[in-house]
Length: 291
Ligand SMILES: O=C(O)CNC(=O)[C@H](CS)NC(=O)CCC(=O)C(=O)O
Image (cartoon, rainbow, N blue to C red; front, side, top):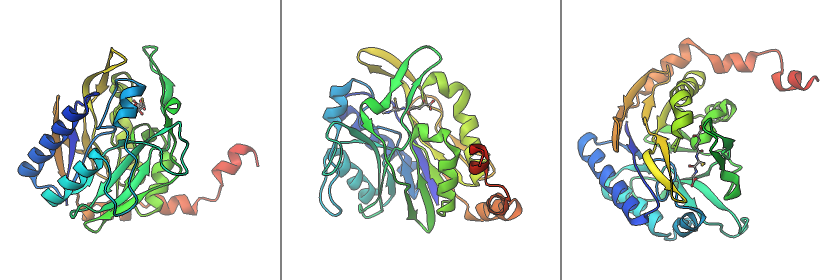
């Protein structure tokens, strides 16, 4: 199966983001005929402020019902092109049982007929101070997810993560335990952190889990309450040995790679790190607690 990562430069103009996503998906499909296409994190809105995020937010429908404009656009593109569409993430408005004060940073995945097959809420919240002093408090606006999510497409098992989740190796190992062969990490990595951490982390996650890593990222600048912020771009696909097998160029665009299950099987057979984890005779968590 071929997979394409879409590299966008979305902002807080919803219609412009929709048009850009549609255009890039159409171009990638026409050029490379991928079986699965992956969008970046919060492709429906980046920046603006609390108001533009709230305005872009959509309540996700019950299975089978119709949703909001972003949801229906993704469903329609999946069906129209006969692709699996991994919708990076969209901003989800709280539904029944959710904290009414929070939004959610949520992946939705559609199959080739436009049926929703997976929904994942970002688990790790980006509450940090960047090297240039910019503070991020994702948890002020977004609620954290509490479920691991995998899905099947074309006989391959995919695992879901989003952006900052990339820094938590145990999240990726847990997805591998659930059978993941490919792990997606749609992102808005900051320029400051991305220049030093993005590619080493992606390669490390590929190598330690022996999974393909599919990383669609936002590029360029956007405005956060009027102030410009830069994101790192550099969308790529890494194979289970940690080789980068496809990369997007600078600017908006896409990159396509072929997922080869025979390579996954060979890497895992020849270096069985998961078996070695299970065989380990020390409980590392207990040992660190001093038990
Ligand atoms: O703000 C929104 O609407 C959507 N959320 C994001 O873009 C999030 C929180 S600001 N970005 C990241 O997680 C970047 C992680 C990163 O750059 C790193 O781990 O170094």
